[in-house]
Structures are given as structure tokens and as C-alpha cells.
Image 1: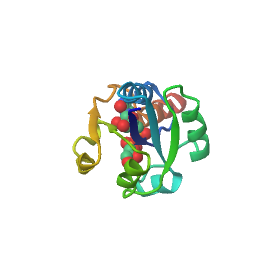
Image 2: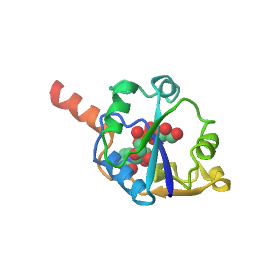
Image 3: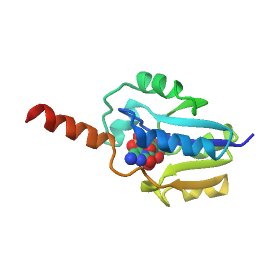
Length: 132
Ligand code: C2G
């Protein structure tokens, strides 16, 4: 069984997230998602609209996702790969090169992002619509 791992915040879930999750799953048989906790996001200067519990519940309802684990720090990826027996690590190519250190432990794949959609865009578009 080929196991795949990816990470993210997955706030205000949109097709860019689903495209990534689906393509990641299609590279193997089992997909683990490392979901950024609210505390970890604070460190990324990101504040998710949905809480970690709700983002986890939403991700677990996606047919491509087999397991969700918490992402609490930048240092956990190597142990996550080892402990979950991961064969392939996948991220969108906005992260290209940033996780090449994982190549000692598994395959590393950066996938093209879906153009024209992002959680930030959703928030700013809604702000404009609601504020004239
Ligand atoms: N993504 C994408 N296309 C978009 C938007 C996002 O392919 N239009 C991908 C990102 O490249 C990432 C995943 O969807 O691989 C999740 O995106 P975010 O929730 O924004 O994740 P991020 O904040 O980048 O956190 O340790 C890594 C971090 O946790 C990644």
C-alpha cells in the first residue's frame, strides 16, 4: 500500500484544496493530511475562519482523505513520514523546494496550484461584496 502525506490549513475549503487532495491521493492508496492547528497558524500569521476541530471534521468527510493528524510545528514532518510509513510527500508548488530535505525519507512531489482561487481571495472578495 502506497501512503501519501500532505499538510495545510484547508480553511474555507475550495476547489484548489480539493484538486490538491485528489491529485495527492491519486499518487497512492492512502492519504494522510497534516492539518495546521489554530496555535500553529498563529505562528504562520494566519487566522483560520473555521476552528481546527471543524476543519478536521470537514477534511475527514472527503472521500480522498484517509487520516487527519495535527500539524503543530515545522519540525514534525520527518517523524510524521517515518511514523506513518509514508512513501510520497506532496505539496502545492508554492512550497517548491522548501521540503526537499524529506527526499532522504520519501518521494517529494510539488503539484501545480489551482489558479484563481485561494482562501485569501475568498475573504477579500466577500469583504468587497459586503462593503460596497
Ligand atoms: N493549494 C492549491 N491551489 C490553491 C490553493 C491551495 O494547490 N489555489 C494547495 C497549497 O499549495 C497546499 C494546500 O492546497 O499544498 C493547502 O493550502 P493551505 O491550506 O493554504 O496550506 P498552507 O497554509 O500553505 O500550509 O507545513 C505546510 C503548511 O501547513 C502548508
